[in-house]
Structure formats: C-alpha cells, structure tokens
Image (tube, rainbow, N blue to C red; front, side, top):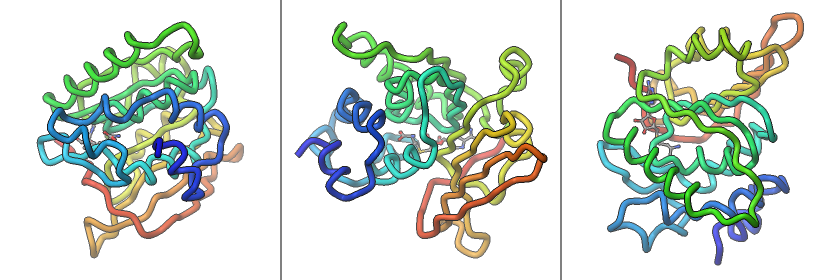
Amino acid sequence: MPLADMLIKKGVLKNKRLIEAFSIVDRKNFVPENLKEFAYIDEPLPIGKGQTISQPWTVAFMLELLDPKQGENIMEIGYGSGWQTALLASVGANVYAIELVPELCKFGKENFEKFSGSLGNSVPKLGQVYFYCQDGSLGLPKVVERIGGFDKIIVAASGKELPITWKEQLKIGGKIVAPIGHPARPAGGSIFEFIKKLDGKWEEIEHPGFAFVPLVSN
Ligand code: SAH
C-alpha cells in the first residue's frame, strides 16, 4: 500500500496539501541503498552516524501540527535524509534546512537534489530550499535579518528545552513544532507546539509519548 494511503488509513494524515506531498515524494529515494525494501514500512530506519530517517507516522503527525503552506518560510532543524525537506518543499514552502553531521548534510542534500531533478512538469512547483551544514540550535540569524523571521520552525531532534534563539527567530503568530526530551528519560519525551502570540506570550500544547534522537550541541 502506498505510504500516503497507509497514513490516511491510520488516521494521522488528513490535510489535503500534505496528502499530495506524501504522494509526490517517494520515501525510497531517501533511505540508504541496502534498506530500500523497508522504505514503505512505518518504522524509522538507520541513515548512518547513529541517526535515523524518522518514522512516517511521526513525520505525518508533526507536519499536520505544523500545517505548512505555500510561500511560508520554514526553518527545519535536523534534515537528515532530506525526506521531510522534500515534503515541505512539495507543499510550496521555502525551506531553510539545517543539519549538523557532515556526512548527512551531503546525503540529505543529494537525495533532495535527485528528487527535485526527477520531477516532471505535472507536479506543482517546489518551494525554494536552502541547505546549511551547521549547528541548528543557533538558528539562522543572518536569514532572519533578511526575511524578518520564520513563519514556522520544525525540529527532528529533542533537546531538554527550546533554544531561545528559535523563539526569537519566529514571527509573531508563528509556530514551532519540536520534540522536547523528558529530563528523567532522555530518549523519551513529547512533541510540543509552541505558538507565539500577539502579546508576546507563548501557547504550548503537549503531545506525549514520543522518542527522538538527541539534539546535539557543539
Ligand atoms: N527529518 C530527518 C530526521 C533525522 S534524525 C529524516 O527524517 O531523515 C534527526 C537529525 O537531527 C539527525 O540527522 C541529526 O544529525 C540532526 N541533529 C542533531 N542535533 C542537531 C543540531 N544541533 N543541529 C542540526 N541538526 C542536528
């Protein structure tokens, strides 16, 4: 069964734009050569350097919360395989994708370039994608100076708390979707939605019961 259909059946994938994105982007092109046969199974898979391409259910869940739209500027922390980057770009969002591990920087960027190069004219235009090979916990201050803040931020590795830089680099009304580790159980944790309100206050919504690879800081 195609991945999009499986995720719809499981009740996690609902948004029309995301359903289309999951249909356009083939996960097979984002997993290592020796694991291609497992690409459509709902499991995370190793991509080297102790990292994983995230589980399809979790990616769909986080993207549903993020609700990316055409033309939005979205910062993605921990792009890894580049799969989620491709999903975001397929919705038409401009993606500022950051990855820390040099080998994965290359892997994800190449996967994405192959994907974008193979698209025919029948699919909608991809958003712009910019890749950065550096520590994502610092965000992208120079980009923020130019564009005036991100509309949304999505994070694939869990820290103990949300770096202040991400909060500062988000526009008012914007949203961050990020896993935060449980202090007592570093591998466990919750996915949080952090919404920056007009009055400068933050609305937080917690979705418990997830495990992520840790956010590494230099
Ligand atoms: N969305 C990716 C998930 C990869 S796992 C995919 O589905 O392929 C999380 C990624 O976060 C890993 O590749 C890891 O190297 C990266 N990461 C961890 N700490 C980071 C940091 N401080 N800055 C940028 N990337 C980081």
